[in-house]
Image (tube, rainbow, N blue to C red):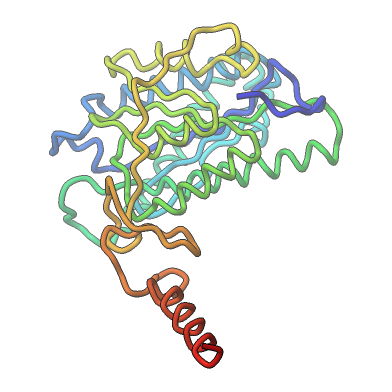
Length: 307
């Protein structure tokens, strides 16, 4: 995918918006679909990766959005985290990043758990991916507007989803709207799936927006995957052979039961998808099969007197 065609953007500077999956049911190990990577190791990999992004270029920016089960929120922004006198060195910057991000992450997890309505869900509950994608796009679009107002060179924006939770079919419409918004804004969505199963949502997101989709085979080497695949800027990707998915799952979710389907019925007015035939569209209210019948009967009534 071509980068944003504007001279206001620097080729080798990146604005990375990281969506961090904090679903507590993903890390419990009580289900076969959970990840085998412990939480402390996972956070060590992520923090090292974020620090390497900031070290690659002093103009690089990092924004971290936590994706919970009931909510999502910003937990770190490198542009608003101004270092103090004691944090001028690189080690101090790393320490500041770790302390602030972990502190905000802990507060977010506690608050997200407090909002939980179901104390004993069956299986693993999906994370609020649609909400975090919307927050990421709002952050990037506001940054783009600031660029056009100020005029100086600015980082190329991109989104990286660190996702482990299964897809939530009920979020299909919202996720697809976010994907198309990112495509229109020419913002690539990279995906790194750390769970045991692939994500159809993220496969489509990376394919449509020109991002990279990767499911690491060895979770213990997560930092190596992140640093070699997702740390590169958009210009450098033109000279690298990045991994490509074996296939993309383009299946959609029905609007009636929120389940992934292979074949279904589509409303010709609003393009809503249903797994079974309905007399009326629950989205726009269109009545299926009635318009053609009314037109035919009207035509017959008008032709009858003439004949």
